[in-house]
Image 1 (spheres, rainbow, N blue to C red):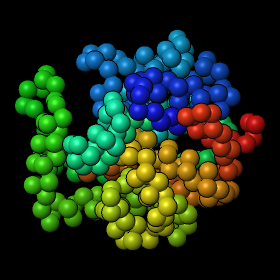
Image 2 (image 1 turned 90 degrees about the vertical axis):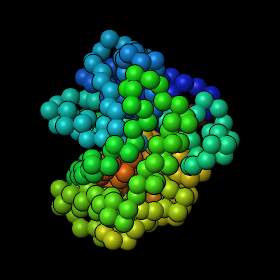
Image 3 (image 1 turned 180 degrees about the vertical axis):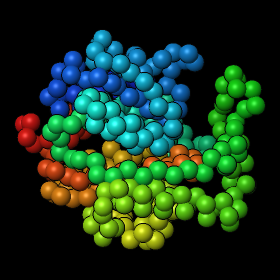
Length: 307
């Protein structure tokens, strides 16, 4: 994971991708796919930024694609990568948040809302080795609420920050008791689906890593309703980093490892949301507690068996 407010998101993703590949001790030639996701535009329109990242991480090896699911993109890329890995491919997922090009906390104070972030992460998924195993995946959505997020009628026009603020206000104004209930139930469906596929009861989940809001809602209520553990320290860590979208799950996993909270057979449940329109949940079992290494602004988790 790499965090730096002074570098373009694509370059942060390249640095994180190289570090993840090195930690996995894999040559670029072993990687079949690179999947990139971002929380916002990370290159000029028409520029396939995912191939720029591929060139920086893998060179000519493999192929690349981009997933656009905003804040849920990071976790969703793991879903796609898991399917490819089960077919025998090694996949590297990269993601970057780029809500500001300056001091994200200063920017968030001036425009309102949650703090913005500039961070990137990467993860390698394959059939062999690794310190964690995906046990179950769940997903749900509320697509009927998507029209409220439309920033411009003219799709070719660039949306400004003012447009985005206006759409957020429009979404807030459109919220009803029924729509809030639908979003909450969407989260619960995704979580219970992941647990069912993993053949796990909520009581066996040792760590819950959702997205964050200032008061923790609606994720705190989801945890209470399903019976998942809630860690105030993990929630505060997410807030301290500013608002992390696609990188939330990786940052949470790194923090759990740094705290020494991960042990063999720990069960981590991740939950990601895209604008409250979709939810993705993944249940993961820790096979071996990962080794944590820090190199400047880079924080890396690796399988102790490769050290």
